[in-house]
Image (cartoon, rainbow, N blue to C red; front, side, top):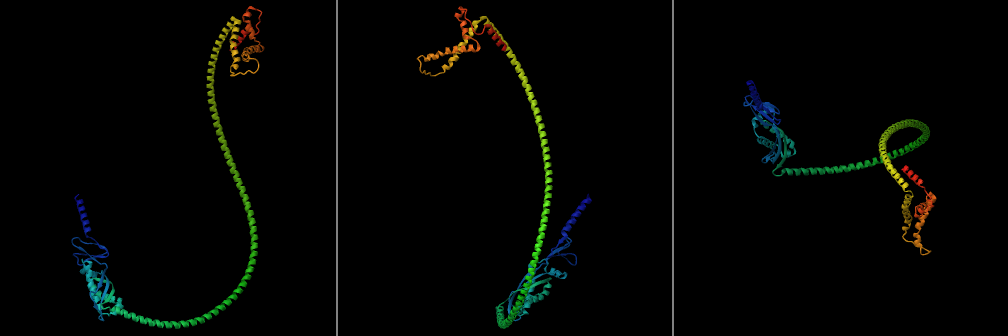
Length: 478
């Protein structure tokens, strides 16, 4: 456990040691590690390691520095003209091993402004020196040469600071008395004069050369026109000959073309006819095959449909048969139930009819025995009972008459009408006697008081035995 703790502490110490001692330097910065060693180590765009508490790391910028250089007052040139010069320089720390040590001694831990001020003073001194060695005209006309002389003159002085000059450019030059402007005017006048003379000589030369050119041009034009006319004439003759040859060749070609066209047309017609015949044969063959295919397809469809219809009809017939069987069974069951009900109802009705018949027969037998017992009196009683009903039936049509108008005859028309009822009743009895042989009038007279005293009265109609037989037959029927 103690060993593990020691190892952990050791790892922590090593990690802290490495994190504190590890140094990284960007490309535009020089990191100088100094300590017990004789020479400091310089890191530019890479990483390194320093010993904590024994070595230190300092940083110095090595990137480009822009310096604006302007003379503070007017500086006399070689020709004693006071001027001011405005220039700009780009400088940087020289990273060669020898010069970077010089730069470290001069600018380490200094700001960019301190570096810029030091270099500016040195460049201003060199600028003054070069201005004093050149005339104003040379400075104005040869700014590049002037800038190069300043750069070359200041190079050694700046190198002693550990700095190198990247570029030096003159921006502006001005004098105190405006001589630069006058020099420009003089130059402009000289240039203008030279330009005017040159222009006049040029115009003269242009006119002379123009005349020569026009003359030569005219001669050349005539010569050229003649040559052109000759060439055009020759061309026309050549064209005519060529056209004649062309027309002849075209006529021959047209004739040959027409002959060839006619032959080709005939050949095409023959081939077209043969192609049509072949096409028709193919069409006929195709139609035959299509007809055969259609026939087979139709036969298959008809057969399939027939089989399907047959199967459907069979299924339908089976279903209908099954339905009819079930309906017949149901109907038979219903009929059996109805028959059983009818049989039971018939037996009940028959039993009721039997009992009713027996009761009626018994009543008829009793009635017949009573009629035998009472004899003619019973018959007379029956006839007397039905006479009012007969008279009512005869008189009922007369009772429905609302109004009767008697035309002609005596004053007894209404009474005669009412007396028609007995007359009609008498005629009914007579008609009954003629049709059935039953003499109701005779039966009534035979049972009257006179008939009982006069034994010679004969009753025409049914005898007692006939009446008894009739009653017995009625009982048997019931």
